[in-house]
Length: 391
Length: 112
Image 1 (cartoon, each protein chain N blue to C red):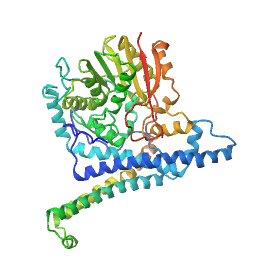
Image 2: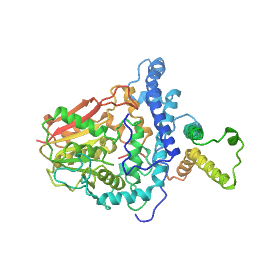
Image 3: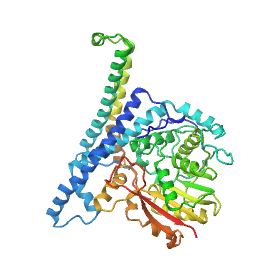
Image 4: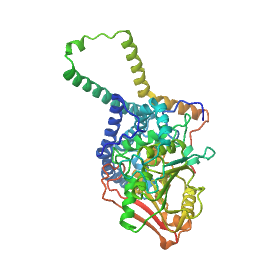
């Protein structure tokens, strides 16, 4: 497992803060590696047979699996520990972030002025020698699917400013998601970007995008992957959250990568029609809403040039009812409010509804040759990719 | 935003009840926290022992006979209060949520 890269925007930890983060990572590793698979065993050995004995048939859908499983003591113990580990994960990162927040904000301001790539070791400067920019929109209305509940239990979510020029949400998210996957996201939390990039290399190897948009980019961890992979392209990232974007900008600058970030809602952006060759998102769609999903896909289509490609990386929602139930843990217990509705959404039909030609849309499954060390809810993992060309 | 606010430690949104008795949820949350803090303490002790061994001639006897002075006592009191805060935060939030519900200041409902 590569160590998390201590770039200048990552808060330093004291002895005890580090020990706390290390324990949370170890606990989550234990939960996913040792305890989570047991929930499937308990279902097969106890819960499903007990349901059959009582009803004379197997559970008919995910809801019936839910009713039975949530009564099982083993599941309850795993679930309670999973929930608490998520809360402790954020606490363990918030402490060092708050302690150093004024210094982090100051560092972000200074990094913003730096000419990216001038001294970057490799690949930092893109061919035209641009530097990254940040454009915030204080008038933007943050959508209800962000404000109603804090997604993943991160206090304040992606969008809340608690002080002027706040970057805390970004710093907390960066280290937090790394702990969430026990380090499996890579030293720059690059796993999702690498995965979608590997898909492009494998399935669309002739693609040479000159303009790339990452929608719902948060801290730009995947955006940076695209900017490095296509150094002559102009790469932009949008998100609704101001503090994560300030952090994303400072982080990209610190890593020596030129990205243009702007605070915009992917449902309706201010980009001109046909602005991009490639529009991507990384496990973002399930954090929107049913109506927003249609609007996001419609907007992505508008932004694509003719022949342009849209790619959305998503988490699979499970094939069997017990798998669906386990994946939906996040929805019921971790404020991924919308994700459970994704279980029954036909992404291909959604893309067609957004205007894409049926023959230009594909929902693919992709198991890249990357080491995914920790599976939180399923024993067998693959990524789901919604791919669509604009005619 | 100009004036800084104290950032919250708990997340906004629905808090699931996992066990039949909500008290078990609270005990379980505290138990996981306690395990975390125990791990932190073990690691601190381990660090101390390793440093003592390599960088000083300090004896275990001296550790056993150590008496904290006033400032050390105050520092430890602060640390204990912090531990209590960490440990019992879920209980406090649970109470706050119940009171809020009773006052019809309902928690958020997941919807579009």
